[in-house]
Image (cartoon, rainbow, N blue to C red; front, side, top):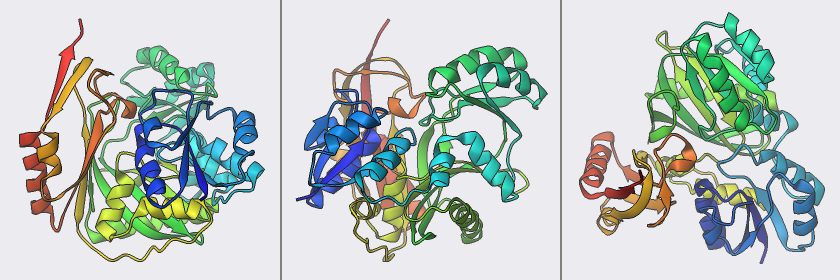
Length: 397
């Protein structure tokens, strides 16, 4: 039996751990938090920071059965994945450019500019540098940590007077203390999930995204396919350009897009890894391919079957609360899971846990996946879910 190391124990790692075990692999979840949501889904737990590559290499390097290392749904852990694969001789489709584009938002903007793709004007650097440079941008602006993900440390600033607080929040979530400030663009939001093999996009899905209100812009729902065939083809062509430019050989890819009022496609950011919030599962549901299984199979050095066998519609809906407090119960779980069209319902919080309003990806209580043959049927499934599911939270003062 071979072993897969999964870096990070956030809820986005749960499906990868469950899938790897189903495929007969031993799983090791690596996280500095002993209470991370995915820890209980692994065969073994390694309580080490994913940033401590030397210690991880020392401990994982002892294992003769280690076959691969992955960082699902997390850009933050991609550098450790890349370095561990190099040091331990494990399979890796990442290139240095694909890695940097995933963890350095300013570099990714430069890549898009080099390809002639539209995008916002931006400034990136230390807190002091962006504080000065941002005053020349058109407000409102978005302030982000350059090397974080999941909606952490993001703020919308409507005037220069908002910058100091926003920059401080971004620095708090940046390992490098580097901040990026971008002019805010209006438009419709989409997410791409794709699988790359032999340096080209083999599976592609475009999902329409429904987001929380500003200033956080966190995904509440994905529906795939999220556009007509012409829009899907245009977005795919752009992603293929980016993949070729970055020299990304194989693996999963996740990207956030915006379509502005003029119909221009703006790629906001990307990650050379399996997407979170159920986007990888959605890609699999509309194409009839187990995308997570393909991700795991490739990570341990085998070639997955990526032949599409189905068509349809699918949706991911985040389970969330609007108030802070103690989670008492999620009512209607059995009934919802029994609904025709409901594929899965994953909980990332348990009764008794402290929960908070959904202002970042890590605050979700879980998510639901549904599939149908067409959009009206999918909407009926989601309406049935709304009628049955109720989240009970005991508020705190």
